[in-house]
Image 1 (cartoon, rainbow, N blue to C red):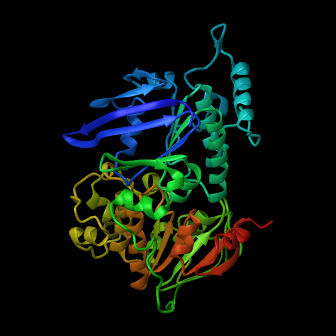
Image 2: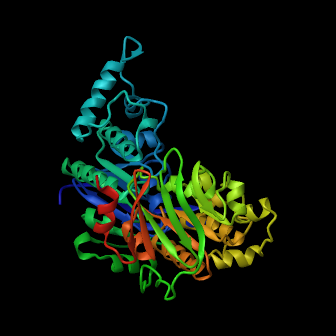
Image 3: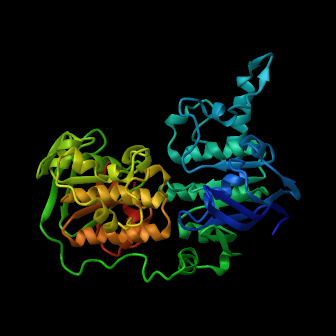
Length: 481
């Protein structure tokens, strides 16, 4: 291992009297990919925010290249060589790549922004990471998420960063896009940059990291070489107990009657969709980014309706019609599309039943059903962890009791404990007779949860696979030319 770049010693932090970090130590060396893992609420984000200058620690010290540093503002952390890539990217979509890379640090000539110099420098940065699919003048909003991550990396390089923090960088990426990002991460590490990598995806942690630090309840459990770890060990360290299985057992009984049927469904993004969803069955929906997975879920729900083909019991032309037909949708982006963040848990969980005047269950019993029993119904959703926020979204549809439930990336960005709870609830809903369509970019999850898998490619169904199919067979259908 190379020289130590970062040393955080005895870091403590409390919010409103609650200690969220308790004497945490963390070191990272030049050229190292150091993963930081733990359940939501373990203290990962707070520790990274202290390093990035967003929070001041109550106790402990931070050293960069052997010098003690104290940051009162994120700009000071940037100047000290710390760059952070958040899960929700901080780029400005209506500006060009070059304008984002040099935002607030634009080169000036004769009192004006020197656009030529800025674009030339950006082109060199993109070339240095092997990026050829877009250039300095492209608008960020036109780039897919994977390429926006490249812009963030170029920005970090422009800052001459010594330490790059990546917070759930692959949460919004499909499998093949994540692998591209992994290549860039290794390239950054080969330049002597220390990478702090925060992720809930255990397999990528084990494949990518040199060392792993596990946090639990604000304390460091251990730091160890990744080569000495495996997934079950990580799970046990993170949640303090064994997980008998990552996925609940599949239904022993064959699926029930068809709850939803589509023949020849199509719109601007989808063509010739034939699909049956049956009671008691979890159908996995696989496909590369841009294949039409989310578009299919929205078409079935009525949010972006089919404009051709037949669908029974009805072809909804609006969300209201979809709900009336007994269809529910857990959206891909819970913060932007799924939750009223400033509203209490109660209002979010009962949103559908109130809007449609359905019979409402008792809120305490509902929260207990989805594993949120300890929460106060009056607590604002924005204060919850990602896993608990997702359970609130699920509670909304448990309350509405749909015949068909569409789940778009239901475990994205949640920890292993919450993920296991969501898996169990999904299987429980299927056992109760709900027909479930589940979209996931994590192929092991899709294979582990599904009774069969439907694969989309370019807006069409490329084929279907039985339960227990291999990742290779899924990718062969998803990526075939």
